[in-house]
Amino acid sequence: MTNANDNLAGADADFDAVVVGAGFAGMYMLYRLREQGLRVRVLEAGGSVGGTWYWNRYPGARVDTETMFYSYQFSNELQQEWEWTQRYPSQEELHAYAKHVTDRFELWPDIQFDSPVAKAIWSEEQQYWSVETADGAQITASYCVMATGCLSAVNTPKFKGLENFSGAVHHTARWPEVGVDFTGQHVAVIGTGSSGVQSIPVFAEQAAQLTVFQRTGNYVIPAHNRGLDPAEVAEIKADYPALRAKASASFSGNYFPVGGPSAVAVSEEERNREYESRWEVGGLAFMAAYADFMTSEEANETASEFIRNKIRGIVKDPATAELLAPKQLFMCKRLCVGTDYYETYNRDNVSLVDVSEAAIDEILPEGVRVGETVYEVDAIVFATGFDAMTGALKRIDIRGVENASLRDLWEDGPRAYLGLAISKFPNMFMITGPGSPSVLTNMIPSIEQHVDWITDCLADMRARGVSRIEPEADAQEEWVAHVNEIADLSMRSTCSSWYLGSNVEGKTRVFMPYIGGFPAYVRKCDEIASAGYTGFSFR
Image (tube, rainbow, N blue to C red):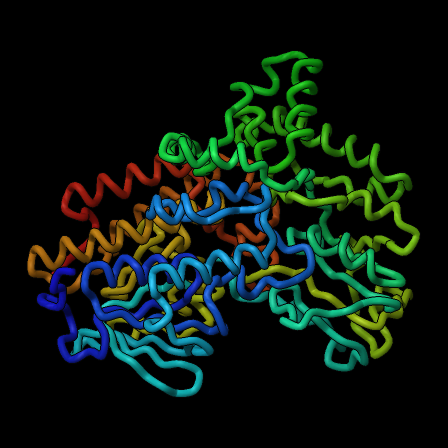
């Protein structure tokens, strides 16, 4: 281990770096910084590692990226020794993996649990960050790395009368560790995004009656989840470097072979044959059936109607099928992967309520009121997702140079350079922040790319004898303009979704992730680093 404590800002700080969050981003950030000999403290709000896969314990929770690729690749030994059991593993298996990584690399001693961060204040005089937890405890560090996650700040709509409801209220993102038994109960589920798609079939097996309140129908591709064959796993592990390279070269950081350049350049028969093949395979690879889904409304509509017809063929009640059939274009919102989701609406104990036009008016002590109809329920489950991308950061009082408030500066949408750093906030980095590909990619490779870039940057700074880094305002504005320009070319920016913050009342509508693709983004980051970190100022 090298002695890295020279040439650091804030010589009197408690630590060289503080990392906020102990999910997959914070865990790897800790590993890399410690590898360089830095003194690091990780502050985690939860009671264990795993981030998303610690908190999202709702029934049916599982990753929607094939697990042989949704995993760390920085250690070949780790890749070879860990045995995944399913194509799409459950939350329990992913949390076990996170704990195994923490054990294997002895990360536990440097992580402080049950420590939600309330404030992070930059001291211009001391040249360090003072980070305060909710209980008032403070630590100082030369560098602050926000590994707070893109989907971690829970979004609970403020329904009138919710506080008067006489039954139990749950949110999928904060599910009790002991679980919930809905046997014999009448249950309302509000929200049909990814967590709703995964949990609704499980709830339906328990509840006496399940009422689902849907604002927007979503496209759900069957997961066709299965156990992994040992021979298949051995084949992947034997060729992991080549497979990882193919994934890194793809638009999303996943290895999805593209079926063809254009959905409208082939016959309807050929096109439907490709769609049927992708449907039978299952999963997110459906997105790669044709390359022009994101740029051609005509191409997009062919996939949209294929899936709508699948829904009409699965759901027996025509009126329910039409409610479930999405009105927006395919891939405009996040594509969901589920198991028996549409089939669940054929059950006698499941009903669907459309709240797209006649919204939920209030929560009464006995249930949910929509117009003049009251749906009496014993429990309510919010599957309403997150204040994505920016929520976790804005809920912390972060203040930079001249007491600049991040909340205030981001009031009209996030502004960051490369999704990695923010002007006026020296020595602070974000992992998969707004303006980076993040949620549009396989998250763990995106996390590793950011962590490696940050680590290399800090090493370069020490080698050059500089201790402070901050994005230049002009470079940041140019990057934000580029992110917006690219977003405007894509179908994803044409409908209301959490990518734009549309699911959070009062949030400014801005397309937050970078949609230019993982390879293009990595090239840009590498070019900036190779040129001496263009767009950053040092001292």
